[in-house]
Image (cartoon, rainbow, N blue to C red; front, side, top):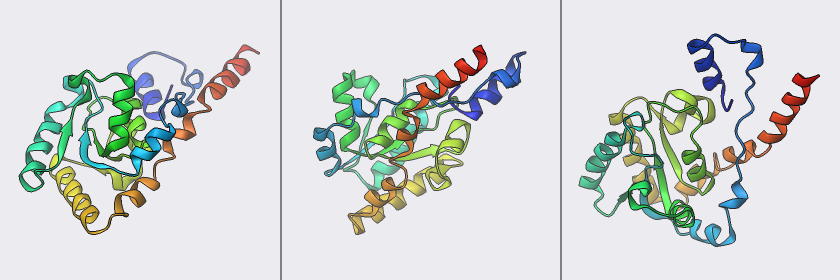
Length: 198
């Protein structure tokens, strides 16, 4: 499985042997979306917040819309994008992430979060709920406990970005490598399978 959170969820909901469930991460093919062209785009980030999920109740799209309403009153130039509604192809989606400053999730169900990891690998600063697999994968400063806190945190980041053009770059630099640590996940899986087969 991808995370310890996922492992505990399986143990709680099923009859199983916990010692047979291994946490390996999931493979991340980051070189597929981090190209020279996108690295150039990442140098010129736009005032965009992305919602990286499908539009389902467990992904809390209404939280994203509420955040949009709050932020747009003070920062009308900010754009809030839901790529799945725009029917972007993979290349267009990765290009959007490379240009965007923030990625937002308030998901109620997440055992991994590949959409968020893709965005982070392309320099988006994540704003994530303090629950699920996010707690295991991201530092506390990128997590929020409720929508009011998320809104205040995003406003703070926007203001700091206005006053210091390096602020978001330095913030994303702290976490941009998180997705890359999962590139060896298939090797981890194969080692476990080989060991279990003996």
